[in-house]
Length: 301
Image (tube, rainbow, N blue to C red; front, side, top):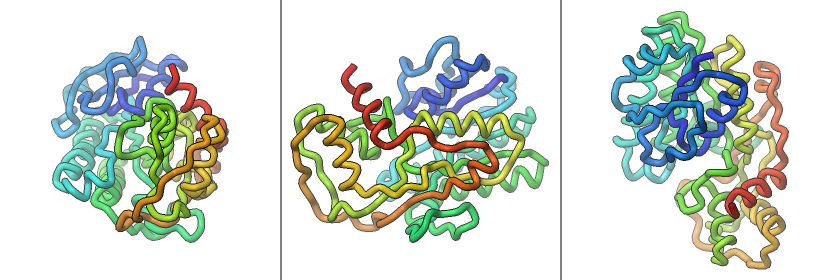
């Protein structure tokens, strides 16, 4: 398959590109390198430096892409609150540009959406037909992207699929960024620095390993289905529990420091994976301890 991956030089995207290359796909990467890195794009994939806020019609046409994995995004919730116009330009306009380019060539689109930022508080593992109550411009923009996928599908007969990811973690996530608590904890422990937990640490998330996310994405490409599918583990892990795993893996005896809870932070976010198993044949394979150990090993190389 000829596949184009937007954001393919970034954290999740580079793992998807590696998996596509490994199975023999012809892969083209579109990335503006604002966060992605050239060295994360494996050979023989080709890198095209381009901002998704600009039209992609010529790129999709010239590469002959049969499928597009749309991962390019502004992914920081706090940035979306501070700069909602920028967030919408990347996450809404960028998605429309991808869909319009795909419409002209008949390419299928698999769109990286989000679970926690769309569902809001989850008393039980969220299912795809649960109410969507985003609390941030980021969540609202991703939900708008899903809406555009559905509209283009109904209007043009395309079968596009949105994947609502849980909290993805793993190698290549930036340990010095504002998002990605696993990478942040491990990065600070590697440097011998204290880790900060906001609030009491009871807030919980569905942590899903990036290698599993890449497998789910390839399954989505290979199956002619549309709609929305969660990609998570169905397991809620508190921040305190996560820190305990990080301490165990690293052998650290450092205790975290607590600061005031951040306003608007979700208390619990966890995704049901029943639909992913039925629709995509996907089940996560990597335990949290295994994934954190792999992430720790990658930071030491």
